[in-house]
Length: 412
Image 1 (tube, one colour):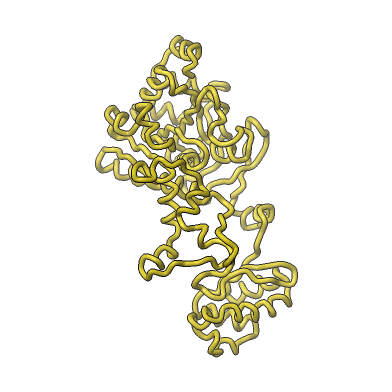
Image 2 (cartoon, helix red, strand yellow):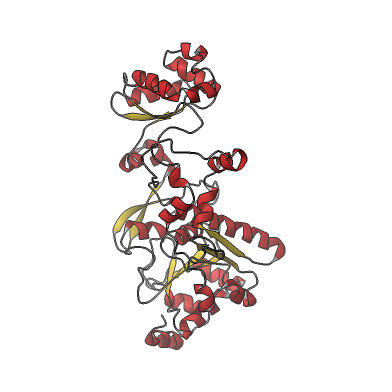
């Protein structure tokens, strides 16, 4: 992007108030991102750039501006689309496509999660746009990849959780496959796409060239199998469901207490010795049933029963104090309300205030990364649909007369 254009981006003018929108961070100031995404995986990716100060322009259709996942006033939409500007463009019109292509010449990054083939049909694919903008970094997120035997399938998080193996290792043995409680394939695909874009932007500093970044829900989910996947690839071991028990680190899991439940993570021999001592069961250290990791694995059910006989004698809070003092990882099992009441969560600033156009004063989830010089904050709520259309179009050379004609023709 030309320097004068980057300076204009840094101002991020709000056409309604003629006041500069505050930057959420200076870390990515001067990077322009065009957001063609919808639902969750794509917006998750783009949020990483919006929260760190890039000029993110969310491209919305003039007809259905809530296309990106639920109503604009809903928690999901509010949490995904903060710190952005909004431009409404009808990409089914020649004027809309022309405006997008002109805008794409000024962009550093474009992110889309259309079905494979849609961008080519619209003429806004990487091959086309990179002719006029060779430094463009173009990211595509799909369900199963841009090509291959299953590329045309519609992608959805739960489908990827199942196909990617996660549901086969989640839940209690014998109770059937179980999804996890968050859209982890969507979220991870978005974060991996953001990582890929950042890698490409760093590489562009050396080569001067952009590139096409691709990831998918399926790729993200398989990668996130991590050590479970390695167990199969290296040893041929197909992991099974283990409920709340850790598959290899024993005893790690959920244990009942006098007033509820708690998590314990007893990993390695040194922590095992501390744990046995804290429970006043030093005899377990030399007990042939429990003395070594293989022995504890073979006798995990018996060990779990004996542990729980003891943990039932005290409250969760008492045990957590005892275990942490002994150097044994232990923690509460909170509901979401308790999470945000936790003093450490308060200290880390994970719930941040914002004044929403639709909801008034509210809170959203902030970035989980602390930066010493260029921190992130939620500086602006999700924009109104088309709130910045005129300002953005003027930045790329459209006159007021041309903008009025586009409105008349339904292009914006």
